[in-house]
Image (cartoon, rainbow, N blue to C red; front, side, top):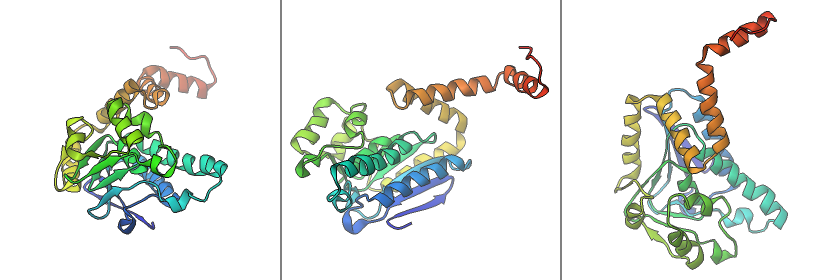
Length: 252
């Protein structure tokens, strides 16, 4: 679709924000398309991971396109724009399969919130991250401050959100936010994804749900998924379903 592309190679879905002339800034269509691709990845069994990247060598994503929201009414901004971003980024964060942000340049505002929603981040050396929303009179709106607080010290988030400072890839790595700094982030992410083919997909999905529940990401859904899976392996469900179909009391 326009301004966002996807290809599937070696059990990996590679989704690329494709607006390099505008530093891959996000518009409504891109948010909706990315959420749609996440839904597709969830349903395709032989896809083992998703890599999110940005076209060009200047930016992963420089945030939200001000032309998409700058002239909205306060109600429209809150109900339409902010909700659309949450639907997209929350869907990415809750994807059951591993996700890697391959970051080749700036990740600002909504772009940083996208990267924070991924499981791992691989950065090019010139990558910088930041929360510049105060420069245009708004605040991070897609759970950036809350989700980033699970990965970064409060003082670092305040540096970005209150003082407008950017954090380098090297510092992000030292803080544990970046898994790797490399000149070829997409290729590195592909090599990492290739390792998943030799691991249990079910074990990976379950481990991710456990980790997310422990850190407060979609706790209710994670607990229900783990409990539901455990019950579905029990002989009780076979007897219960059979009893229902035969219109008799189950014998557990």
